[in-house]
Image (cartoon, rainbow, N blue to C red; front, side, top):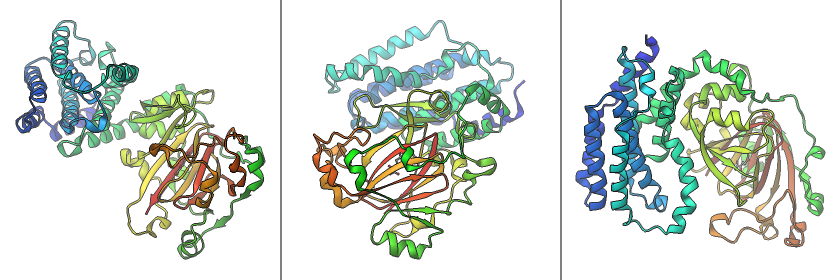
Length: 488
Ligand SMILES: O=C(O)CCC(=O)C(=O)O
């Protein structure tokens, strides 16, 4: 018997979207497109979608998955910015189609859940052949070197794992698993696809996540995650910090702290002269700081567990081994935020509050952000274990970096010190210093000793104002949740 809430959820989703609408939109793309190779693939998509409408739920779901694989190949051939936007729309549309199929199946109360998740044994092979033939017939028209293709292979494989939602891997799944995978499907459509049908994937991911967050099962599972407890009371002294800059240490002053700063004082004393400062006492009313909405790992998993996010893996973004991987917040917490985690994974500079509006209610945009030319504020979340590093770099906007929980060690240099900080010569990294502050090579960068700067520990409940062009290096001292606000 289907839970009344799930029934309502599925009915609401089906009120929002329909298979016919998906098909109509793919047909529209087909009719508007003039390039023959794209038309061939779209023909195939339309054929498979039409066929799948008359099939049982399993076969229909599998057929849609195969179509999504086909489009996934198109998205990952050549450079992302050159990918035809139509492929992104089709990818999102097929994600919607797959979600509709599962909801329809769940609403047919006489169908056991196992049937949603069962791997079909017969017709998949035949369709894989159609897909391979279509890819082969169209891919040779895409300019991509063999070498580039093979180096992309592993990454492709990793991404493919996510693209192929694991519905197909398990023979049975709980309702919660199914709901979580629907969120994953929606997120993949959002991340790789283009906004379609009033961006309904966003709404679908949100409503299901909200439903799951009320579910006590998630809370029970948290116990199994062995997630890290935040040592709120731990206070760090600057002397305890492991980062040692050698000769340059002597040039670092402790950054000033100011309490309950008024807008007027901020404008006159810090924003106008572009002087960094630590602001205390301005985050006390954030729900994220205390009470039932206090940000910590269990709360994050409860509110955003099934959502898919990009995780930075590796020492920092300048190192060769650095990579990014898509995973759910729950997987991220399990792998990187538990007490005995050895690897560092960083949910860095991500607009998580746009993705999960429930979390946006836990923070307050600081009034300082409305002192600029525009009211647009870029809000990014930074969540990671002890040891995440953002190498020395600058940003073009004003920034208040707000520390919700955990502490960070930060080193700052004014824009005037740029000549001593050896920015990377490549256009992509021009705003990042070549100096590794965790292991300074003075033989290679002798002028670094001349750079005057500040350092500080940013404690929970404190904000750091970083003016545009001010160099900053950030290292987390324990599990840390921060939010940055950039404005012009
Ligand atoms: O917290 C971090 O790791 C980096 C923050 C940062 O670079 C920023 O807010 O601009």
